Structures are given as structure tokens and as C-alpha cells.
Image (cartoon, rainbow, N blue to C red; front, top):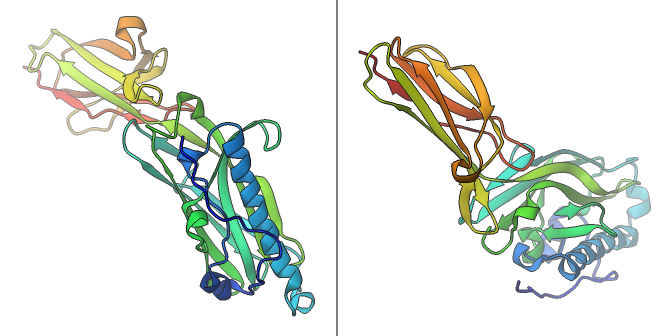
Length: 307
């Protein structure tokens, strides 16, 4: 994986006060190592080091502010509303680069000296770090936060992941958000786990009811296949031994689960198959509720004309 390089921030950089001045100055709120550059070991450790250096710079700017002691009337900086893609997970397929968006809010201080979110995977940030990725805003030296009210700020950081160069199957599962925020409040925020979220291998599911049309009293076979993205081969493959639910409805009714079973293995990897007796026109589909590594998916329904 290629390594993107750029200048490092160091404590003692020119002091910038306030959000508008911070943005205008180009003072980085972070330093990016792009996903392609973040491998296990040195790359992840270096990305984390850069994020910590940026946080130190923001703290130094706060300490050096001429009016700092008078301004620190609020007790604590507060970070809230942390989300990933609007929820708590993000799915990536086999070919297309996906943008992962992290949002958060800051309150408790009237001046913001800097804030930054990074995403990481591992047991801990010291001895068990596997991945550590800083945002696109970090690379561009742009401020991810903007004033959104009286002493409040709304922040957005984006991360681009290309499954062909940045991910392996091992990366699916739980990730965490490292986040820091420095305001003129007395206490700042520095946390390794502002939120736990899940990076998932995209899934797809098919349903086909046959034959159609069918004579009343004959057997209908509903066949489907559950697949998920493989980040090692960059192809979709059958997802084995997973519970899939068969749902049915009348032509005008709502779907309801009528049975469930586990998907096949071997040459039938991911395949599910159920039979029904044709009694009236009816629609069928399969539904998968998802796992910690694979998002839920519902197949398009297939309706059978019974004659």
C-alpha cells in the first residue's frame, strides 16, 4: 500500500483563536493517512501519532490564548450525537469506493480550537491497534466543524474506502471512533471510543417462485441465494449457515414470515429453497436480518399466478 506523506504539525505552531480564524488560517485539525496507506503496524501507528500531534497543537493554542483564563467559564466540553452514515454501521461492496461519514456535535465552550474524528480497529490503541484512519478533512487542512448556534458546533468528517485496495475480510466487524475536541471550556474531550460501529460486507439476496403460472394444487418452489461481498477476492460469494426467513402475502396484503431455515454450504453455498402448495395467487420473498459483519437485506418479492 502506498504511503501518503505530508508535513507534520508540532506543538508551538502559530496560535489561532476561534473557529473562523482557525479555518481561515489553514491550521490543520488533523493529518491524513489515507485508507490505502493505513496497514497494520507502522501505518496505523503513524496515523494515530499524527492525530495526537494535532490535538496537542489545539491544546497549545488554547493555553497560549491571551484571554484564555478569563474565557474558560464553562466547566466541560461536551461531544454528542456521534453517528456513522446516519446510524451505527456502513456497508461496502466489492468494487465501488464508499464514503463513510461521521458526524458529531460540540457544546460547552464558546471558542473551538479544534476537533477531529478518526476511525480505528483493534483491541486497544496501544498494543492491539490494527487500523487507524484519519479523515479527508485532515488531509486537506480544513476544519470539519462549523458554528451551529450559541456555543455549539456541528462537525462532519468523511473517509473513503476502496474495497480493492483498502480492505480485507478481516476488517469486517466492530470499529471505534477516536475523537478529540478542544474548546475554551475548562475540560476538553479526548476519547478512544466515542462510538463503536460496524463496517460490513455488503449483502444481496434473491427470490424466485416457480413455476408460474401454476395449476391449483401443484407444488411451488421458492428458491433464493444469500451472498455477501468478499474483500479478499473482490467477488460475491454464498453466505453459508445463515438464518433466512421466507415471507408471504396475498396480492393485496402485507408480508409475514411463515418459515425460516439456514442457508446451504458447499456447492449450494448461500442457497435456500422451500416448497408450498398452490392454493391462490400469492407473493413470496426471502429476508435476512444481518450479522455484525453483514447488513440485513430483503429480496424483491415474486408473485405466482395460480390457475
